[in-house]
Image (tube, rainbow, N blue to C red; front, top):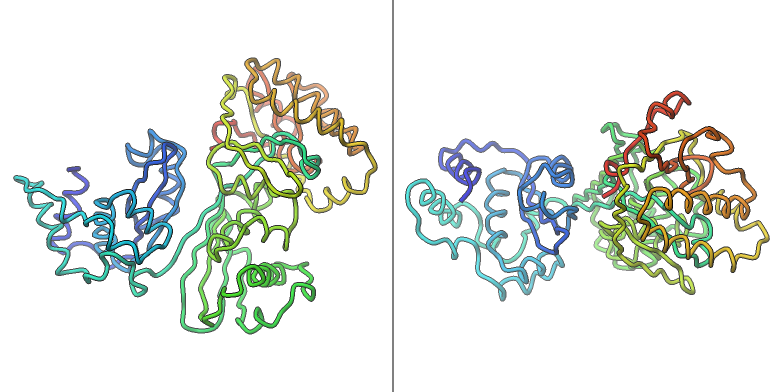
Length: 454
């Protein structure tokens, strides 16, 4: 038994645990195993796990994904719940994650029933676990009480599209990668029939705040909403959710909701897509359908939000085909992302692309081939050549200059635009660290591939 466990249980016996809000969480690791923990700062702890600074179990099984969270008003209650869940079978944990509460009592026994007798400090720790029936209501075993489960927390990954920009809309095979940074959504039920919404940026500053009466959501229609401002965009999203799930908000109970970005919202890593995926998880609707009713787009960003690994993405008769893939080039330490600080409107970029007349079939065939070749590249030189060919193809289709010809014609390496051309991030492949080069050009945000991508 760990020293951390013993320390916590001894503190509990001495009555030193404070009345502080705390969380129990379950992570799904890359090998499919589950890790259960507790913390007083969920976002900070998740970041620690993702960056290899968490438990020994998770640091050897990265990346990890948050699949369940519960909030408590006391640290000791969260700790008890953590140890209870840790003793459950995999089937019972999955029933909890999937909210199949009726099945919980039928599955495995609780942790306290598995603890064998021990000696010295470990014996005292085990005895403390047996004391929890006197301190925590028995109903906590088997189902999360509403009085205890104060909120739900959802999280989605950011995104970058490495190949297939624009033409992914017409069926091209694209390679996309999820970013380490993403966005979380916390949902706390309240008794009033209102939604209180706060959105925080990566510096923990509120950048959007509003209050919505549920009646406004119930009475609005999608056709009437013009989502030009954040408030009307939020109303549009919630109305779209109700179109997909008529039971959403039907009990007329409100919520306090917070969103927290890990990245600057002007970076173009998926402020909208992570929000859509988080809301879809909360409301139990299809995130791809919710995206189609609101922001639109190919949907690759939703796929990245939902995956902790690189993916290929392709639309077949408007149905997304998402395939997890291994993209671990031996030269990934030679890859860098550079922020151009020229934020582009993806919807305008798509509209421009759609307005052009071009025979796309041969283009799509070429992009499909490049995407496949990129995933199996063995040398940096081969990868650089593919980037250059890809850039020229998209340049011809969209009738835009490549970013290399516009800004970086003296760069020693290869550069590729990502997403809507002209802004957000570019990918640079270079034998030498190009940070000084880009800094001298006035571009100060240069991020190594391994620091950006899950």
